[in-house]
Picture 1 (tube, rainbow, N blue to C red):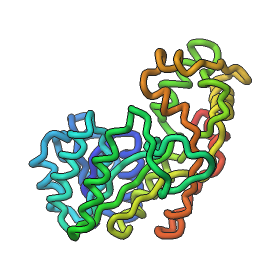
Picture 2: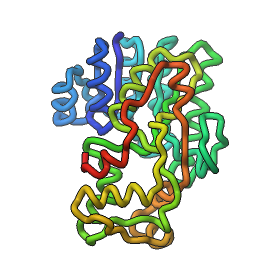
Picture 3: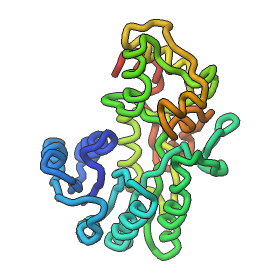
Length: 286
């Protein structure tokens, strides 16, 4: 299948290009710079110079493809919706896979799935109108699919490294918001890449949470991260207000208590997470 992909040089994008190529798909990837073009090219994708604001480029590339996978992070909801609209207009009745995230559900009060009510922190509240507009295309003959990754780990994880590993090394103790009893719905980068490939065959209007099904506590994750950098047992509790000052709005997302099941994607797409021991991976620094 001919696939047009945005965000190809990013964390999820690199893994997804590799998975798509491995499954025999031909990939054209949007690249904002020569460096990004070199990155996607090294993974087997044909680069297309442009950014999310180049709506004509997005539309034309989608029109020449059989499927679109939108991974690039927009600066605003308006930018994301404009890009999504241009690509959905271009792809027509081909599959359009849009990226969301599990943080939009807020605290889950136990194990939840895609039917949970939305209660997003401010950081991701803008996603609701975008995803509603994307999915509405299913009523008009389109093939929209939304993948909502959990908190990613594995490989070069910039979020966990930036807010936990690096500060932990600098301070001599890995931060942990509150008592760390809240759960994190984690997913390995290689598993989420495989879910994007599987989503190309999803039914129109489908939504899938991309999670590994193992939901350790934030404290367990912090302890594992501490172990990975030689700080065994050294974590520091940080009040939420202080975490907001140190981390910004993302602190409220890290403080969410979330547990999710991947049962829908397993049943409908045959996707089964291969990585089921996130604490071991975090402790290994991989």
